[in-house]
Image (tube, rainbow, N blue to C red; front, side, top):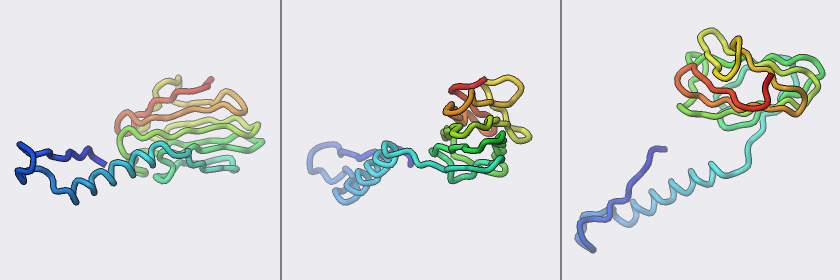
Length: 142
């Protein structure tokens, strides 16, 4: 949601400010957004050996739990149009190595070779979208 400003008016009771009902609605919207931001992190539990994040993963923690290697393919904006500056976390819960690779045209900064490998079981990373198809990976990586 974009920032909303409640106009106070030029002076008290001059009728030029935001009406009380509209101002209350704006306050409700802003608090709803704040509560959503500071609530528990939703988890998307994955148990297979491959996964491509979807639009519903925005703001979530994707957990990867498998004894075998797990390939996570980070989608291009043309396939999954995330909002700007979205953040998605990925964690390795199983013994299998988790590798995150950008799909064609996707750049993942903070790693060499375009792939992120989580540093073992219980390691994690956060990927933050810097711009269209450009992400920053931070976390326990190798």
